[in-house]
Structure formats: structure tokens, C-alpha cells
Picture 1 (tube, rainbow, N blue to C red):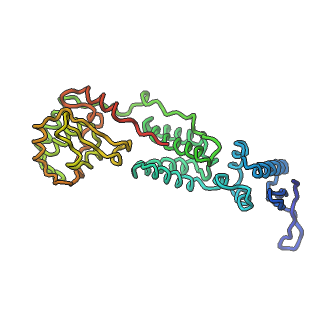
Picture 2 (cartoon, rainbow, N blue to C red):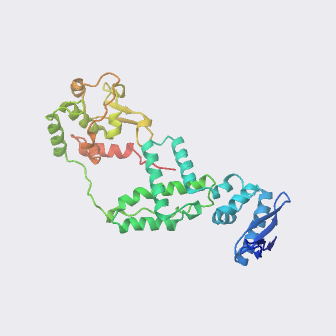
Picture 3 (cartoon, rainbow, N blue to C red):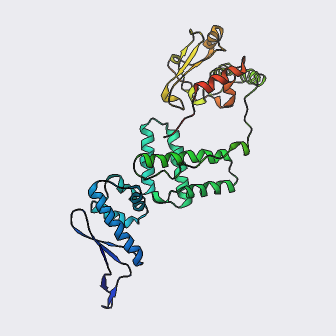
Length: 344
């Protein structure tokens, strides 16, 4: 390996010396290669030494983590030339890809794992929001410092800890995938922790009391028709959600085939593809008896039809953890039966 400074002729015909040094080295195939380096001679010499290491490791078929990190920090123009010469192959070339390309591949991976369209959209938006706000273009710029600075700006703008915590898991998932997929030598966000929401509560969430649940059901039953359902139908649907803990989207997907009213207790089944954790749900409606099932015949839902556009959002999420008769029982069953969704 050696350094040279090329010469060229300017528009006036005068011979000029290039401002940057050129590194000359021999690749693994024995061919002479030239890489335009830097104006600083020492930095150019260091580049040449690292290129010699890259050639020797490419012959051996290994790539140390330290050399991988160095490749990630190289200018994209140099990485592109190394790739055309075959010195970078497979995952090593990923260091030269843009962050947007990596994000697209990550989202495709999540999609192949069966994640919902809503989940994919949120994850993609969160990571892209960080990249845009911090001006990140390549993976080596996606550091813990960049993410922490972004979260600090959100905090300065009075964003709650809960809001910041909704973004960090997406960034950590992306970073972990980059490392697991072999595109990065390490996971730079592995040590980052979510903010403590106990010290920054903006909205105190609680379950509805039995009296409040009773008021909701009685008031809804006396209301006029909405979205093709009578007040009595909606009241029955709300009670089903309270008894089983079903989410709004899960309740909206139900058909008659999802119910086993003859069971003891009656059970409603939701397919895995329709639940948030993608694991399915068999929810026992212990508060319902056969009389309630007969009362359900008033519902105007046809055989095979789905319950769509129903205002189940009126029921608070935590209220779904408490039945009308035994407030603590279903809360415990909800915690046991549902695990928080984990992204890879």
C-alpha cells in the first residue's frame, strides 16, 4: 500500500496537483486498486492500513466487529467502490445502504411475522420521525445519542413520558433487528430504558366502578339507533366487552360462529389474526347466562355478518377488566390471559 497525489490540467492548461491523496493497494484477486482518500495524509494512511486489513479478512472469509464498525463510518462513495471490487459482499454492503432502505426491509420483516397493518404503520412512522428530526441518512448515524437527543426534544416540547415510551420501543426493535440480521456489528440502543411514567401522569386512568358500568348500560339501552344497532343491542355489546375484556376491533370482528353460548361458562373466541398479540383469545363471559343468550336474539346481526362501526370506544379500556358482578375477577383473568405484544 502506498499514497500518491494525482495531477491534472486545469482549464488554462496548467498542471495542478490534486488536493486529496490517493491510496493504492492490491485486492484479494491481485488487481491494483486506487481509492481517492482525504486531504489529510495521516487519515489517508489509516484508510490504506484498514483497506489492507479488509483485503486479508476478505480472503479469510471473516470480518471482525471493529472492522465492521469502521466500514459503517466510511463515506458512501468509498463503500460503493469497495463493493464494485467485490471487497464488500452480502451484509457488508448494507453499510452503504440508506436508512430508508433498511427501514423498508425491517417493515417487510415485521409484515412477514404477521404484524397488523396498524402496528407496521406506527413502527415505520416512529423510526422515520427520528431519522427526519435528527437528519439521519445512514445507519452509522442512528446512534443512541441521536435517539436520546430526539426524545429530549420531545420532553422539552412537553410530550409526556407515555408518548416518548411509545416511540422508543420501535427504535429499539429496528436497532435490534439490524444487529440480528447481520447488518450492524452491534445494537447501539440496547441499553436505553423507557421513561418512568409514574412521575409524569397526564391522565389518571382507572376502571369504571360497578355503578358507572350500570349507568353506561342503562343509559345506552334507552338511546336511539346508531350505526344500525338499537340501544338495547349496543348495551348488550358493551356488556359483552366488559365481561370478556375484548377490544373494540376484536368485538367488531365477531360473527355468530365466534360464540359458544352452550358452554359453562359461555365462551367467545377471537381468531389470532384479529387480536393485538396475534395469539388468539378464548374469553369466558362468566357474567352471561342462558337468559342473556336468549336476550341476544333481539340483535339485528344476520348469520355470518360482522359487527362493524360499533361505538365500543365508549367503554374505557380499563373498564373492560371489570365485570358488573365481580369487579376483581375479570381483571385478574385479563392480566393472565393477555400478554403485552413484544416486537422483535
